[in-house]
Image 1 (cartoon, rainbow, N blue to C red):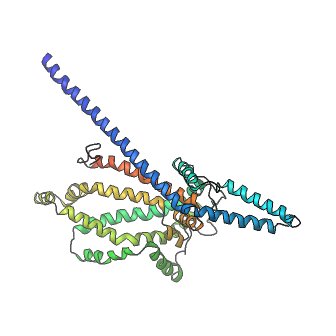
Image 2 (cartoon, rainbow, N blue to C red):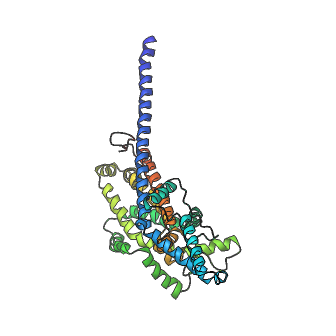
Image 3 (cartoon, helix red, strand yellow):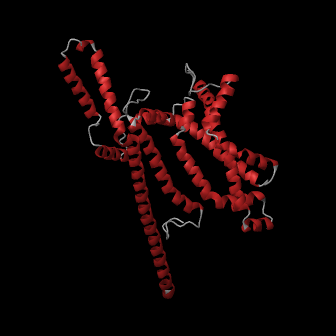
Length: 378
């Protein structure tokens, strides 16, 4: 009995030591990975701030706009008509300087960009220069939060339909290599080189202008239906054309890419062995084709989820869809730096979090991947 107890004790200690070593390795890898992703986010956001401000050119434009606006306001105000010109000029300069100081346009560009970076990293997005929300708020966070639901509705509907429809159609098509449908998909795949807004214009011309069965744009009818079902149906009707344009722009190319991807794995030796054993096609697809491709499928799905938050700038503008893409387009046109930086921050953080989580998801779905091993997750 004593010898058995003595022999099992080192085994238990060895298991405990191994578990401790694995935990230490995972924590070390997570820390290094988080630090590297954080530094990447910092650099990306800082470059966005520099580019959005155009090296200080936007500040000069804002100063000129402030000077022109205030000068015009005082000149057109009846209360200042009888004021002495020198006093009026002094008042104008004081108001201009006060507004410049309020917007911190008098600070050096480098100091100002560092301040923007600090606020961005702490999600203190500040106030927009020119834009405002539908409720009149100039808080950047309010502007973004107001538009997120519309973008998620449009991009989520289109991307989820596109992802799952093309994935399963490609899997079915990979079983019929060289068939008529296979050749049709290959022939139509170049149509995905056309951007979504181009399809959107044709869909508007056909279904809104000619057939008059769908609206030209917007998100809901005016006047807004009073009942919940009526509002839901109205939003769904407005959603059809923009979602269809996004789906059509990538549909055939996505099927072609997934179909080629599945064909590569279908030609592996272990798949031929499974077929020789007489396993059903469904089992072969699930265990020998889909399972090895799960990391790639998960990566594509995760990046698709991130893309849902960014919106489609030109497509949303064409359809007058009030999402993040449209306010980004408007912010770029108005040189509204805080709004541009705010939308970039949202994407940067989502991308970093997704990349970090993907390493652990890979380890769960693929036993070949080891977290924290030599070279990281591999």
